[in-house]
Image (cartoon, rainbow, N blue to C red; front, side, top):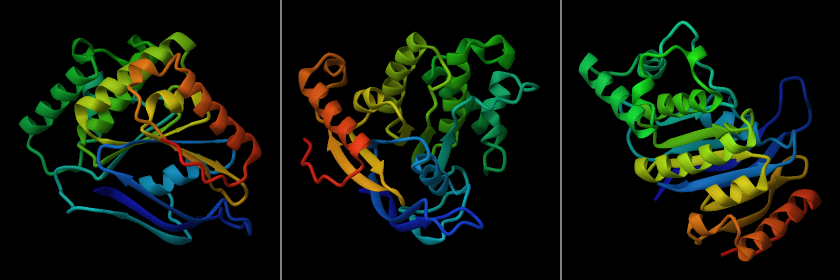
Length: 253
């Protein structure tokens, strides 16, 4: 079952005649981990911001399935930086996303406690943002997004600002958190290796306006992916599509 349907999506920036994306159609299934890759400026983040409701499309539609619920949000966003409020402790930063929802004080605290435990941050609840490492800051951002119990979690290159070792650790942590939460994820990255490790499905955007030039599906266990020759071949095909930017209806697996 789909949690979101994007039909014939089109967007162009104000005062521009050039479409960033046009006639894009895409569905995301419940519990699916979808990665979107593409070159700089191709429109990855623009599509994510349209899904997030931060900008309005000029054409097409973005539809969520299921019923609206005032105790939760249908979508939540994790950005490249943590975007934590420096004057709020960790627990209060997580609570930020809950403001405006129809929840009692006790219900809010239950959610805060639950997502901090899920993201491995329970012992940091009373810390200030400046007392956290870069990886911990990003996990607080994930916890804040999960606290609103979204149908879909939107992530815009959330690990791009951390060092390589922290990035690998956060990737493993994200897989664990995603599997435990059962949420659908749309993850934007420019890193093919990151996409193929994390995702159930990867789409490559190319061209101007942007279109899907290749798609691959993955059934392999993530613990086997890092050094798999099979996955290396897929990465090579995705990289070639990224470089070439032409449509290829490869079957994937």
